[in-house]
Image (tube, rainbow, N blue to C red; front, side):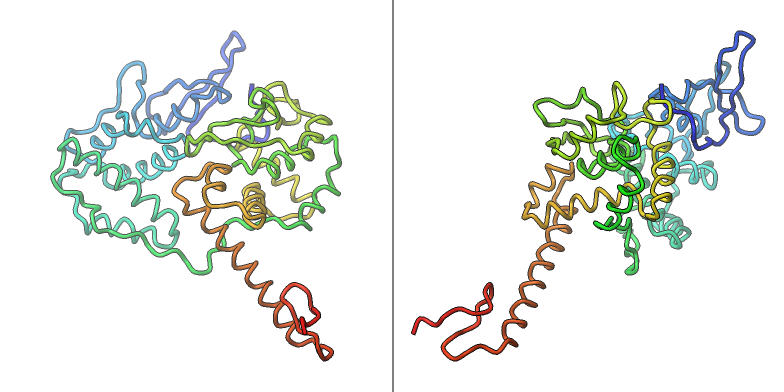
Length: 365
């Protein structure tokens, strides 16, 4: 069962106990119908919650239907397809959030009348948050790519619409430093669950959602094998000695290494909240994802290739891995250039010449 505290509240989700002391969860928006949901610890909870938000679940008496030909109807049909269901859970969650906003604002409009200008308008409304603008365009592109394929529309209104440029001052998740790691370890000693949290993230480089699923059942002959939640790619992670020792000391759970106060597994949301508190106690203002970035940086600086980084971290296409290898190459070149200028400025006795690696080398003459 999944740890319940702290747990972020889900909008429109209500909880009550029956006369038999059974916990019951249901979705209800305003005065709308009550839609029964599984327990929050059930793996299907998030999918059914988001389906209820977008109006696709049976209510027991009726099912919300949209007018044929409307944009809401098109979205409902798309979400029922194998194309949509093949997306990762994280991607579906992002797109459901986009689709809910689209349905609220324009769900009754005929989808055949949607123009490129309307897509651009939707992008520009989200310009203040470029990531949301990008998610909006990605979701609408996927929707209309399917609609064209099944001949619901003849023209894709998203064709030719470009994403907004990424802000130049965006730094993303901040990378942990060696000083950050030392401060955290000084605060949380070996034998604490907080130390386990850090080392699982640091020495596996897994995303938060994958780290909370990792357990002994995934490890064989010193290598953890796990299919990633976001991309569905299988990764192979050698269990380093530092991590093995931390796991030996624990505490860990029966099925997951990362556990909460009661020794139960955590959802990635609950773990994110708890890890943030643990970081704050150590004076570290960084995120779990920042540990994935330092692990990738260390691999790249050790000479890992793009293909090796893709395999190690579950990336595809080489784009993300290339970012790390380019950064590592720039660092090596910068240090090499600095060493050369230092050698050039050091006075050398007659008959001796500077060398890139050794400041003084005897002349062959």
